Structures are given as structure tokens and as C-alpha cells.
Amino acid sequence: MALAHDPLWPRAGGWPSFDDVEGRTDAVVLGVPAWKTSLSPTGAHATPAAVRDALQRYSATLMGPPAVDLGAALRIADAGDVVDPDGPEGEVAVRARVAELSARAGLVIALGGDNSATYALAQGAGATGLITLDAHLDLRDGVSNGSPVRRLVEDGLDPRRVVQIGIADFANSAVYARRAADLGITVVTLDALRSRGIPDVVREALEVAGAGDRGIHLDIDVDVCDRSVAPGCPASVPGGLAAWELRALVRAAASDSRVASADIVEVDATADAPDGRTVRLAALCVLELLAGRITP
Image (cartoon, rainbow, N blue to C red):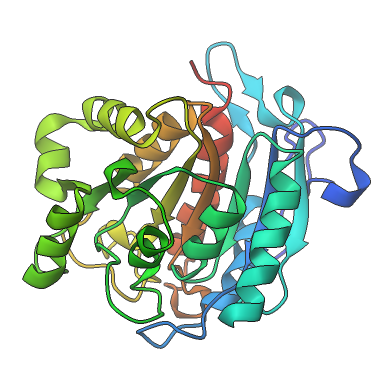
């Protein structure tokens, strides 16, 4: 069914093409539909288009007070998709496109695709710090959606500038937990996040990942959420974050200008609930990233 039209209620999304916008933008959206190395069967390559469609279900207005229209407060553009971003050649293309966008955008927002995209995205943005919102450590051997953090560290990212938030029981192995500890990665488990609270955890994460005024990449793996709100994530489990918790974490992190790039990954639009709740949550994460740019 077509969405209702009201000229006094502008919808989110539908931003101009990045190539048609002159000068700097505050934020640019880029689709990175990686999926071929996923450890779980996935249709994540369908998700960038689905998120763009879902954005149309929302306004771009923060209630304040005063109310603020993100489209009026920020210059936002859409750079389309990287075609076939999987494999070595695809990763080269992702790095090049993200580097190009970063030169003219305050924040690059990548729509995945699975978590393997984080590797080339962070490198293309020149990130020297990494914050992950994820149930998993992503330190597996090999090349997959379970290995981007390990690959980044092996390629030179300082593991002491990596913070992983939301790491869950029964979703990781003891071997990989020891690997994180040996590397000096800061791990905030799901239980620790809830006991400490979002403001305290985000404050520490930004200090660690952004030490020395460095550039931070924010990896938003939606499977950190409870399966009731993220059934379209193959690896989401019961007991994960509530949707409001993920949204609050995203906005708080994005409020720091050192966060120069972010990805929203591990959503399989083809396996979502009939009401599209996972894709809609991913779309709201896009808006929360933008909201962070104007929220003190």
C-alpha cells in the first residue's frame, strides 16, 4: 500500500545523490551489500535497498524541544551502492569509495550487508579506533563476517583502540575471548553494559577508541539486539539489547565528532518478520546517527 502524502510531514530518506551535491556534506549514505562470506545463509545483499525504503516510513524530525528537522539542519546525501563489494577486488572498491566520500563528508554511513564489510569500510575511512556494538567478538580465523576485527588488527589497527560493547554469553568461544584479552581489546559484556549504564560505557569507549583525537569507526551489528526486535539477524539471540538501548547507544556515540564512519550490518531483509521490524530498526539507526550530529 502506498504511503500517505502530506506536504507538512516530510519523510526521511530520498536524499540527493552525492555526485550532484557540491562542497562538503554533513553525512553521506552508502550501500555495501556484502554477503558472500557469511557464516550463516543470508540475503543481506538485499538490505541497503530495504533500509532506504524503510526510511520513508519515518519523519526526519527530532522532537526537542524545539523540534528540529534533520534534513534542514544537516546536508545529507546518498552515494548509492558499491557493486559487488565481496572479495579482494570488492574490498578495494569499498576502500576507494569510502576514502572519496570521507574527503567531503563529516560522517559516512554504510548500509550492509554482513559484518565482513566493516573491514574495508574502516580502512577506507582511515579509522584509527573502532567501537563495535555486537554480541560477537568477530575475531575468528579466516575471511568471513566473523573475522573483521581480527583482520583489522592484523593489518595494523591498534587493538588497544578497539572497544566491543554488548558481547554476549553463549555467543563466543573461550579461545576468542582469550584472544581479545591478550590483544588488549576493551570488552564490555552485555551484563556490564546494563549494570554500568549507557552514558558511562559510551564515555569510556570514546576515550579509548578516540585517544589522541583520532578517527573512530562505529560498527553497528544489529544482532546485538534481542531476537524479538531483530528476527532478521541470523545470529540474534533472546536476551539481547532492546531496540531503545541500541538507538541510545548509536546516538550517544555519533554525538562525538571523532566518529567519522559507521556501518549498520547483519540484517537480512529477506528473512525479516512480516512487519519488517529489523529493517525498520536499521533505518532508525541511520536517523539516530544523524541525530547524534546535532545532539549535544
